[in-house]
Length: 268
Image 1 (cartoon, rainbow, N blue to C red):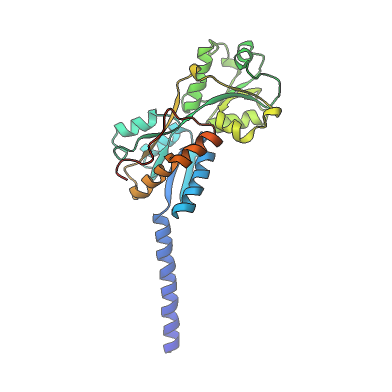
Image 2: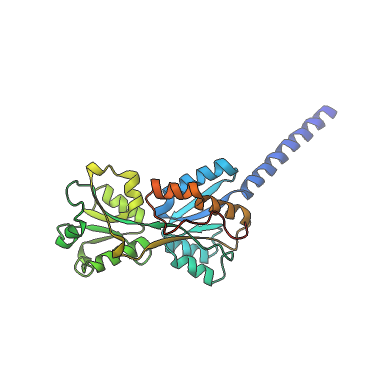
């Protein structure tokens, strides 16, 4: 009887220990909402952060406006990595972020891309003006910052009205690249980061769109006030914005930086 009780006690301790361990793991899991254009880069950053800190990073991706709406409706994210500065500023104005945590982590760039070689290179503007394409994909300007920037490009080239019947609107910039990469459209205005990661230049046509044609895509991050682990959230953003994080974003994924970023957030 005593042996049976001892075994039961031991089993109880093992189960309790596992429950506590799982609870601790859950508490250390950082929930990050990330704009679709930055998903691959942030996935890699999250893996490196986990390797160095032991904290898990759980990513949810989508268009910036949809993630913003989810946050307004109480989605339990700790950190929001947007594709622009508007929604981040809106959250700050509504008092939904920790003070002093709205920062620019990257500046996105646009490219005109077609899977067909020889269509354009340095003459992407001429290709667009000639309108020899049947379908051109852009992200939805109403929901995706990269789509709004694509609209600005077409407006700057005085093409916005004339191409309306040829536009295919993707829900987000990742979907636009998929349409273009699979040949469902003749060309697409995509994220430069997707081109760098997924395209062999000799097997495609690519034009890096001049920054003068659209408002800089200052991608901003915030820590949400509802987070239960602000210290881990700050540690993560510090990691994204330190020297190695900036090098990964700029050199591997094609984002740019206007100036050298700080290595730490206020209060950390």
